[in-house]
Length: 259
Image 1 (cartoon, rainbow, N blue to C red):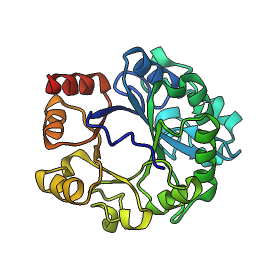
Image 2: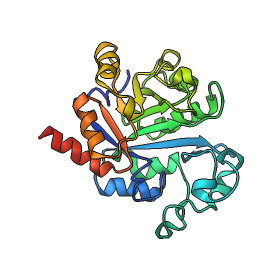
Image 3: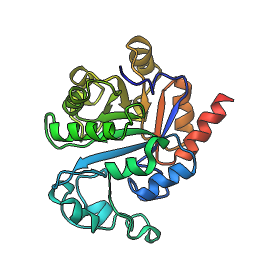
Image 4: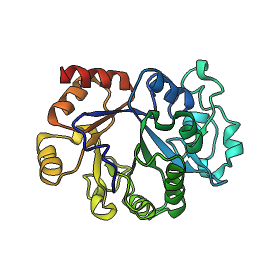
């Protein structure tokens, strides 16, 4: 039976890569800040590194966040652990290390609702990534606290196969040159058989909500929501979740809207 995290009437708030407006994204510091502030959910990205572990990072390339050439899949976990993933944000975070999905779950357990974005370069399914992600979730007994999503509907299909569809899975999409045109408006759901949708926030309109939520029954989680105006518009339209770099702002918007 699929968990019901998105079937509540309350709008869920997720910190985008943790509290990435203030701390280096996808690091322990970023997620700890969310915990300190009582943010209910965190969005994060997972890759397989060369030695086979699931590591939490957004980019395939190491150049932006670690300031070194190369990619995550070319490095072992030991090699990645030697790199500084904090200084790109601020010298205050110098020495911040990459973390594994295991380490994240060990530190935070059921503190958060997790939205895990599966990152894969493979054109079709990545069975190692999806099976290891599912096994890690299950090993930490977090089946009731996790959503999984991806831009790649074939990867989501593989995750659904590995997990037996006990978690909500969401197609991520945007009108962007990096997204194949056929998948820019949510068509991937027909391949992945996903249970919720993750559109870029500007794509969410009255007509969009009427079609996908009210007629087809998909919960809607919008990203990346970084202003009060965006948040209030989306809450008013009836989205089920908001993902943003400043989740504290989003929590304030949700709370003030409910008063």
